[in-house]
Every structure is written in C-alpha cells, then in structure tokens.
Length: 340
Image 1: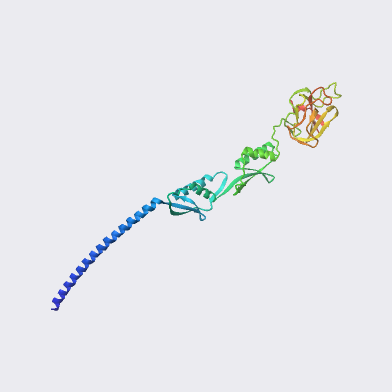
Image 2: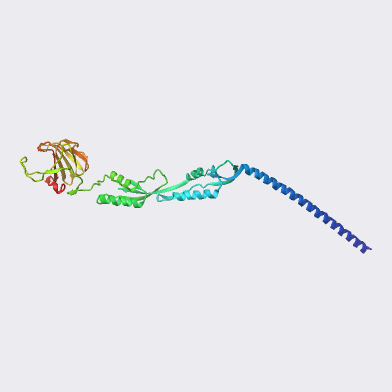
C-alpha cells in the first residue's frame, strides 16, 4: 500500500509542477511583452523629445582658452587643422621659434540653432597665445649697433660693399640676434640698410676723378673752357701762372673738389675774393676771383658743396675761376688731376 500511495503522490507532484511551470511561462511571456511595450513607448517618447530638441538646438563645441570662452565651432578637428596651418604659415626666415603657449579647450554642448561658428574670432584669440621668437642680424661698427637686416647673406653683402667702398678702412661686424618683442624687430632691406650705414658712418661714396697725395678728387669745380694754363707767362703777371683758369659765366656755382676744412674766405689782393680749403695730407685748393663766397673759415665741406660763385674780382680780365692745387705749400699743375 505504501508503494501505491507513493506512486500516486509522485504523480500528483509532477502534475502540480507542470501546472506551475506552465503558469510561470505564461507570466514571463506576459511581463516580457508588457516590458517591450513600455520600452517601445519610452523609445518613441525619447525619439520625439530628441526630434523636438534637434529642431531648436544643435551640438557645437564651446572653445575656451585659459578657462575663458572665446567662441563656438562645429568641427573641432577642422579648427585644429587651421590652427596648425596658421602656425606653419608663420614660419619663415625671420622667425627662429614659434609655439602655442595655451591650447584651446573643447566642450560639446547643445546650443540654439541660431548660434553661428565664430572661427575667425577664435583664431584671433589663439594668435594672441602664440609666442614668436624673431631672428635678425645686427650690423655693428666698433661694437655699436648701426643697422639690422633679416638675413645673414644681406648683412655680409653690405659689409663687403662697405669694405670695398672704403678700401678696407671701415670694417663692420655682424651678430645674430633674437627677440620676442615685435617692437624690437626692426629690419631694413639691403639698399635702405646700406644707405643708412653710409650716412651714419659718414662714408664718401663718390667716384674719384683722381687722387692728389692720397686725397680723393671727386668732382670738377666748374664746367667751362680753359682760358689760361698752369705755368704760362702773361703781361698781367709778374711770374708764371700758378694755377688753372676756367672760363665760366659770372654767378656759376663753384664746387669744392674734395672733402676738407675752409681755412680762408676773404678778399686777398690780386686773387680777389679767395677761398682756401685744407684737405689733409698737405693738400690745399684755392678758388680765386669769386663774386660771392658761401663759406667761412673753420667750416667743414664735402666734395660737391657749393662754396662760391664765379666772378671777376681782383686781377682779372674776365669772369673765370682761378684754381690752384698746392701740396705742402707748393703749387702743382691742376691739369695733372683735372681737365685732362
């Protein structure tokens, strides 16, 4: 009996288990189906909300530098490429080093669709964070800076030309310099720099007509015909002619033929109004019979300066310039050096 009872009891347990399992499966399917419905409703709601949001808003990157907002852009990668390209464009022969001291910071945000890219403003803000080291070349004379140029080649060319112009008497040096201050970076082109150096160092660049005892004769005193040569005798002179007479109209400008210092400018007997100029190395020039004098003793003059006007003062037969060249006090023939 106990065995029969046990079999019956096991059969009932199995039936109960099958019924419980069936009910559990049905419940699981029901709840799963309901959950999916709720999930789909949520997805639809989210989609609807997102659609509404995207109608009014759009995603953009807020750009900050040192924590301060400088603008908005849509494409972070594109902006970084433009920044790098701009930095590369800065690099040239005048820039030794360039670096971005503070990089942009990006934060993705939803902003109103009316918000526009302000890429240009962001680039301006980025440029302010660029630290640029400029390179230039200083031309110096006696350790004193006299001019700046962009390249070593330009500096060396100027130095060589100055050296040739002065026959090696003026030798400049070149120094490489760097600065982060744009106001200190002040360079000139070859021609401008060379002109400035010539003016600052007072270099005579005129072509020499001839040379008198080491003194460069750079210009003729007047243009005209020779009316009386050096060494000739005349009834109006007690001795042979000590100079060269060049006929020219009264009032014609008389130019000093070389750099020097005026030592005499007054009326002197038969010479009339006479100007004397000392050129150094024992060389002196005299300009006689002038109608008007523009210089005074002690005055520095440069070749080509007008010192007087042609006239006929003193012992003269007509308007002309009487030119004398003296070396260590002795007159020499001006035609050895001029009007050949």
